[in-house]
Image 1 (tube, rainbow, N blue to C red):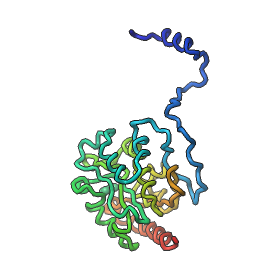
Image 2 (tube, helix red, strand yellow; image 1 turned 120 degrees about the vertical axis):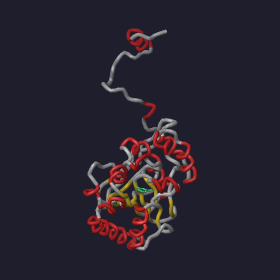
Image 3 (cartoon, rainbow, N blue to C red; image 1 turned 60 degrees about the vertical axis):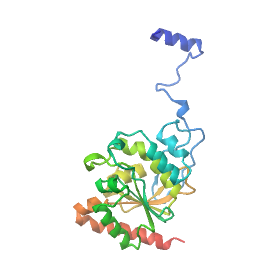
Image 4 (cartoon, rainbow, N blue to C red; image 1 turned 180 degrees about the horizontal axis):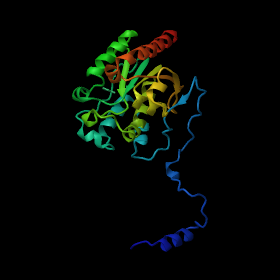
Amino acid sequence: MDLTLPDLLRWYLDSGVDETIGDVPVDRFAAPARPAAPSPVPAEVPAGPPPQTGAIPGTAAHIAAECRDLAELRAALEAFDGLPVKRTAMSTVFADGNPEAAVMLIGEAPGQEEDRQGLPFVGKSGKLLDRMLASIGLDRTSAYITNVLPWRPLENRKPTPDEVAICLPFVARHIELVDPKILILLGSASASAILARHEGIGRLRGRWFDYASPGLPRPIPAIATFHPAYLLRTPEAKRGSWRDLLMVKKRLDAAP
Ligand code: URA
């Protein structure tokens, strides 16, 4: 039977719905079951993903929030079917490095070599990233590396804002599970998604932000810097990147 508009209105009236209270429908089932954690007082600027509690079953937010450890999160991403870009990728590039490390780096998306090996930052820009880490005394045993998008976009294109937004709950959960002392965001796709800000990387880099999310015991200091691939194309930007890394080193050295 086809339902006409008068049928629908009559059904609403029969159900006791006789008053409109807003112009825009609200999905009450999607509303958070419990309030999000209060926003912490920022060191500089507050940042963080939307709360994940009360998410609709089957959505990335719900799947990610259910993951209790990194193994479950990896398995959840491997099983996730919400993005076409996954179908053309060989690997789900989850992470590399030490999940116990004080520093967590988040890049953009795997390239060809990363897709082939199933590891982040193992191609040309990865080699530069390794040198950048070494310059402040870090390597993959003392840093943990992932990306905002775990699947390689074809032609090495930049991930679209939609792709990043769909994966963001997984990244947010990833950060909660690793709970590093410092977050380094590599490039604009990572920085603007994770800090939830619209400025370009030139404005975001070199400043400390507090990254907060409901599953973290406290906000994490986060800093953005240029993506190594950009530095390969624009060597004159390396000076700024070096300054950002020195800020990280200073903070690490000062940490208890
Ligand atoms: N660029 C990224 O952002 N991530 C990688 O893993 C490789 C290149």
